View 1 (cartoon, one colour):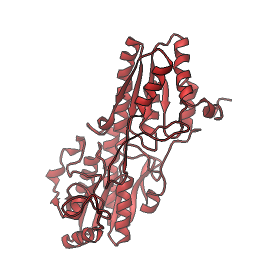
View 2 (cartoon, helix red, strand yellow; view 1 turned 135 degrees about the horizontal axis):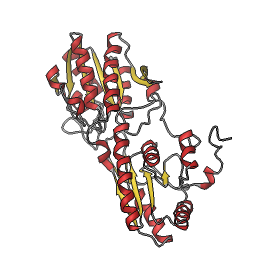
View 3 (tube, one colour; view 1 turned 60 degrees about the vertical axis):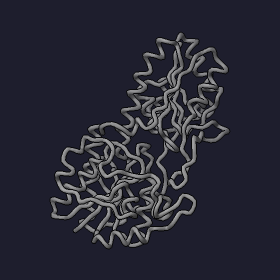
View 4 (cartoon, one colour; view 1 turned 90 degrees about the vertical axis):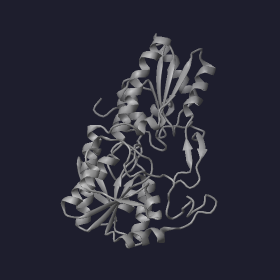
Length: 373
């Protein structure tokens, strides 16, 4: 068989480990492997490289992707010159399918998040033999318990919370750390809990300005002259909208978020005589070496993707359920986001140790922590 691999959407640690897992597993079966450059852009523009064992040796420890990626190359609404235009998106999916056939590709492994997997499903509907591999540091795909890249991003965010503690305490400041997390606040929640954050703000629990201020004041009344706030970029006020930094035409997600932490700082400084400092992690969360867990998970995902191809189980995405690799249909994979339930055990555990979620009206209604009665 001849199979192809592409990595789409944003980069993250673990992509190279998946590429390695797919390539080594396929080569061991005597198959031929090619990699498309820069995600779906390479597929549309027919840019690819042959992958041999030497090409993937040693890349398991490297962040990013040796194949390159793009979060604006959509073959169904192509906007990249010279084949497309930002003003007039073109449907070049037929060209993408033709390029696969011309090269004699028997199956395509598409590695990416919600946008990449949506495009993969559309190609499958067009007759392409596709297998998906889930990648997103937001950990927001409902069809899998965890996605690779999340653990590595969580490590970066938790270390940032750790480092902010000493400077916050020294200067008696409120330090606000903004993490990624558009619609799901998994990074902020778990980094906040693991790093001992005092206030955690996530998209699933809209915040109230008065409750954030009250939480800071309550800490100061107990002699705690500093506070650590961990906020997901998609956090929003109870009666307000998410904070948009810019709009990117041609991207699967047009809106780029960022800046909510500065709004929080302004709210606090207006009402309390305390200095606030903001740290926006941004793409730091996407960089660096993958954690051992992400290397392990990515290798398993890559090997399982090849197994699905061998069994001709196309139109599916590799999934991780109950600590084992399995698969689901691409339709199920992109059907719903995996978001935090406000009454989940980890939210309740954080509340039990005194963490505020910036909305006392909501958290007062939550049930007691399981087993506390």
